[in-house]
Image (tube, rainbow, N blue to C red):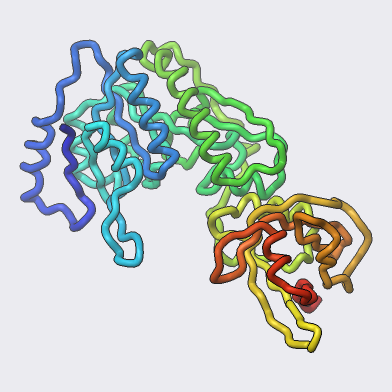
Length: 363
């Protein structure tokens, strides 16, 4: 049975050091010749990577000796301390788990030095890895990054790639260095996009592909035949963390750009718009609605600044919105504030003879 020695609830006191040493002594000893691999990750898609790496471990001659993940965080209305998905999977697999608040924690670094891992693999771990960490694994630390580096370095590569409307993206396996996402590239896989992918779906897919690539390159890393290639840093672009205030639209932009933003910001922060419904007697109601799924009906058009009313009969399965530049966006799925997501057809039925328009904004 694996153990979990948690660093997350309070700063570690010097008295904790003997406990760490005792914990290290209880860890399974690797079979002779078996490489020791440490996995660092936190969210659900990283947990799937952990499962795949664990399944392949015996056949490939390595052992998952340790999992490192973010500390448990309060979740739900009752704010119950909840472990990360990676933490939960590691316990199911009976792999030892550590949850340091920072990867620079002295006790954690000492623990890792005594473990003497051969390779560390990171997948959306969420903590900066200092040089004293990177010096420890015999063959280095490799990272799964969901973009074709040097493009989209940073915290939100998948949303920013979708927002930019790229036709092709992919996943990169690289050696980790101190500068974010700037390490030498070991392997890359390109993925052609259809134009309707949402960020969370694409993220899952890219990490699944990336985990396969990790399994492909591990043998060459262990036998020192790997030939990493330096990135062309002059071509680097950056993928900044998303901000809540970005998730709004008033249809002043082109339909293609709004469609890409809806795909990119699916989940969080989402894309919201304001509309007006009005009864035959002139009773008006402002509605704030989250736009969940869309398609571009017309990518180009002429200026249409005065077109705000939505023809509810124009499309059977969608709210057809004319943007200010005359381009046309179909809203297929939406979520009125305080309600559950629903198809646009169902929402139109709830309007019961009212007129419906996008809210006017000053220009």
